Length: 340
Picture 1 (cartoon, rainbow, N blue to C red):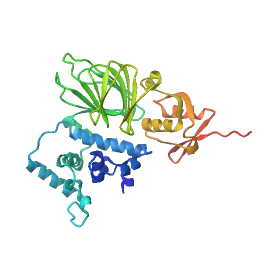
Picture 2: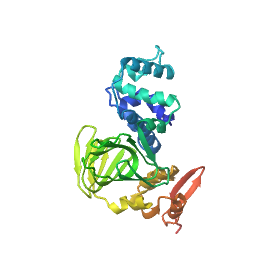
Picture 3: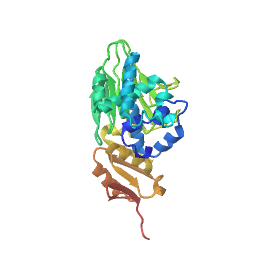
Picture 4: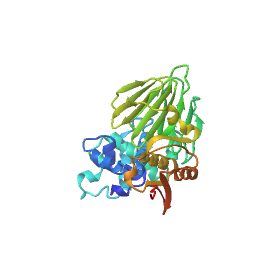
């Protein structure tokens, strides 16, 4: 059934997904990791669902039990078969096995969705969202004067209260470059990613949060990375860290290549084609694919535009190694074969 999921709310009414996200004892991590693996669309769907859950937890306050019970009842009425006593106990909902407070986070999301409110409606009452469309790069200024540049298909959300002395918190999905403004009180600026936080006081850094992989390149200043276990890793200027499967890994990268997206360029330097496909699909919301998996690890070195899909495809097609064709809405990269 999970193969048919294509909306965040599909995941939010699945108790197995919630158990996996909250790492409950009855979670099925292999099931969900296998479902996500190798499917960029599914990874994006999971990130959207998690972002909705995080949004409802921006400013949790104790709720009267009567209000909680009322919300529970409305939620159960909205879910088909929720009261069916003949269903197996686990299928009757995470409410029977999960932490009550965590379940109410999901309930709050579903109540909003059931009322016809989308994510922008949620954030209006709790803060502000900024996003870019496919193929768009945009610069914005946050309430404290911090400058942020968003890459294509990226979004950030920030809470409304940035009073002096309080932490300035941002939730991010996609890719962005931050130039954080220092405050007289040295209040922290925190970027929340899926699996970790980036904590700074004033600095310049680039962040990627896509498909379960989180990368940080520190250009100036100092940041501290903190994962969900509370473990911390400080970074100094020039350091690049990739976080995947609960592991930090420092790597050597070419900053100019990594930051080329700010100038609306994509720089590939011995990049495997499978990575190019993922990157282009993220930027343009297209179905670019390889004609043959045998060329997935073939590499390409080129500088291509990231603000014009057609020019990018024409540049790929003009190479001696690869050709680009279209078939029923799919864009296919294949290897050129020369007759000798």
